[in-house]
Length: 111
Image (cartoon, rainbow, N blue to C red; front, side, top):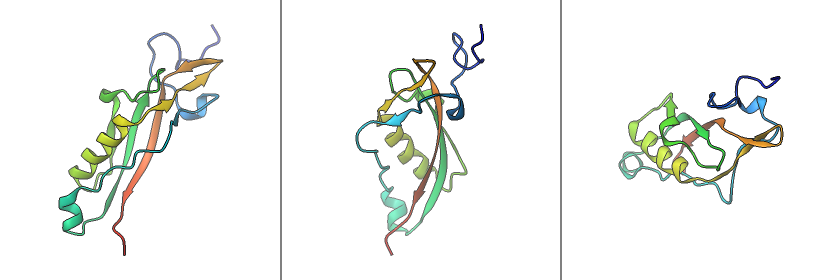
């Protein structure tokens, strides 16, 4: 087979640069809720989330990872938002494939 390692059988998810059509959010993007304790203490922050969107357009809960997290409450808020988001699945060779998604989230308070 001339298929790359990604979409073969139960292999891992494909990288965004390897698919023909990226997984994209359906409808409005769910913004994470600003955690109230952090808002009250005027704490801003950010994190980089990575997760896998499956062939049905759902985020695989076990795939969610957060890096460069400035506070655990931000990670919880992002996880809740991401797991509730639906996506149009990625496509490769005309069929749906699992895709790894990387997304930066920034929490800023109004000035």
